[in-house]
Image 1 (cartoon, rainbow, N blue to C red):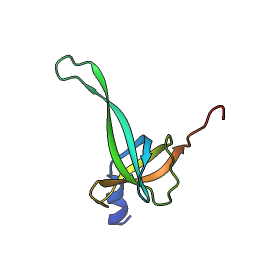
Image 2: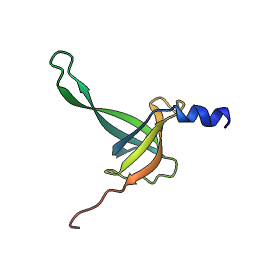
Image 3: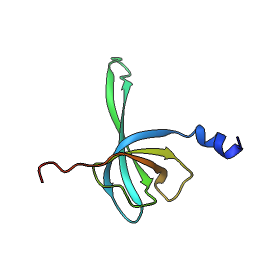
Length: 93
């Protein structure tokens, strides 16, 4: 195992929903998580919106994707699409 493989294992990875496409090879992804409230300790649902690099322009709005952390690719993009877990389905049309 070389150093590159070892460092890629420790990268953060999340699954989220594609909210939008903009520019070439860029998407906006929202991933949600639960965290305890500071005072009341109840689990609160939160979401974070990040910008990701879509190398093959395959993602569409509504898809569920797996993203992982990478070096900064632009002003906002610090994530890249690893795989598309579920394609968006158009119901009734």
